[in-house]
Image (cartoon, rainbow, N blue to C red; front, top):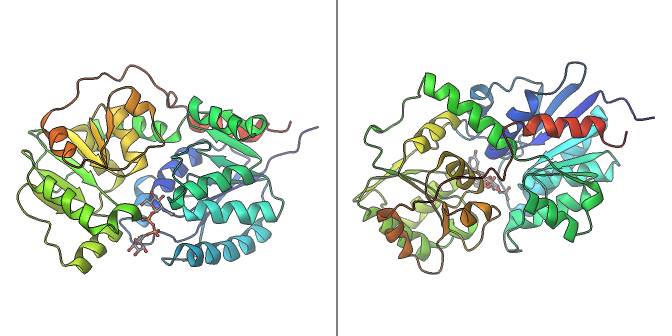
Length: 358
Ligand code: UD1
């Protein structure tokens, strides 16, 4: 006899997790209570509250207001507070998302309380242990009772790590939200801080520690973007804004323009009309791939190798001059495969939770 499932707790804290949460919260069946613990890792309205309202996430939320700190401090604060919340809630499943410090804290808190733990977006690897996100992924997968893989390659990786019997392929929930958003945006497009009619512009975003704290590299990238033949709009994550200000750099020269972090629908609309994307974000690489926007990923590796194999994404790291070439010559590959699911992943993930162990 399987157990009756009546309560799921989602633990989230950072921007990309709110998008994934929106997909899941839409398909939780009546009769199952879904509660949300928001660690408060992201707290600016542009990074957090705005996403909840725009994505119509209206389930009950406990906000732990943990805020910023070193990795250890931030994760430890979360762990203590999540444990207290979980003890009060005693859910049938704890669901964690992606690879942030909030993911890891949720994983440890649930595992130590012996609560059933599921990891959405399991099995992704950059094989770069210097990335805080890589540590978070590996530890979260190994602490979980159920690993929900976004691609077949991720599922295979879970197998290599001895986790195959507790893993299932469901696809990527970000595809669900993206396809949904694309349809509603076409009906009522949001307003952007620049004119999009010409389609002759690129979008840029950078937020990873490895890049924002490497001033010589960052300066070289900004310099290349300033010299681009088409305008480049850099949507500025607060971490990047702080680093640029502290270094006393003046990035708005030539073709480069800074804009605030975009709301989700604004970013999708901006991408749908862009000629290219330059980013270090995991989520955006994949969204651009699905929308058919050529991308240069400013990293030495990616968790989404299918985007490269299919010709839409290129890693630019050792030789930054490839960035200027990239902005001149868009690739011609077609998206002819859907390695990340068909837009019905959230349902598959929730079905897996409901039926697991029965
Ligand atoms: C985190 C995740 C990363 C994810 C990204 C999405 C980890 C280790 N990294 O990186 O995987 O892709 O979120 O954005 O969890 N800050 C603000 N306001 C905010 C949020 C952050 O000012 O609302 C500033 C703070 O100075 C903070 C810095 O940004 O110290 C970095 O934030 P943090 O949450 O540590 O990591 P992210 O770079 O956002």
